[in-house]
Length: 313
Image (cartoon, rainbow, N blue to C red; front, side, top):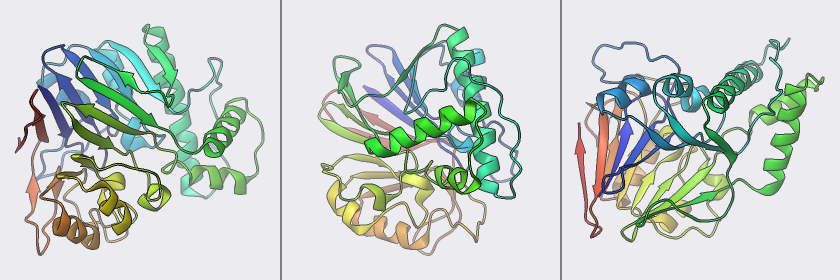
């Protein structure tokens, strides 16, 4: 049996996968470094979820891309739970320097530099603890007898461009602000996507990769889809949804109002409700066609025969 827990970490991602027969544990993203208490919400930090679930080891931790709402909780996890492997698109050099705060008024540039500094600390802590840190490859991997993983990387040019610029930033090289801005805005589309298979069921975990970026990829249908980018207006297109045809669509979001970036966006939620039998949010505000909800997690269970059940917890 495979349990997928989409943890309520507010506006962020953290997905816990456990195969009971092999005791294999996988964590995809770790939410923010700190989750503020919010009345009427059951969101909590990733490490608190893991401790309450009794997770005492992690065989594979995947960090999909360098935004705080995806990597922020990784240090806490590494400090409390042994992690065997860490996988990402990019790894900082072992001699990565601390990057001083940029002289920029662009929020996205400042955020990227802060994320790179945090990421260097995460990977350094992982290496010091004996965690095997590796860049994802395109090769399919059999994690257990029934569970397989195929990492879907961004296009080669984007991966190379990101690696060259991030390495240069860590070396302390001067980079023009327009270049910094461009690479900071590419972090979502550089997300590592995961396609997993268990008992002939297909699971697609997407990071924050905008739908328009991969809607023309040769994607096969899936059974369970983690909707990218918290269900906002960039998260899904009709063409991609038609190709994936999921039975379950899970949106990691929060129940706070966000007029600038509605998550989920009403038009995306309606598109999903029209085509997907089960649309689930970790928590959400009230919509015309969807009630307000909050729970600690969405749990989807696949048994060894491929039967799928879900619950709100």
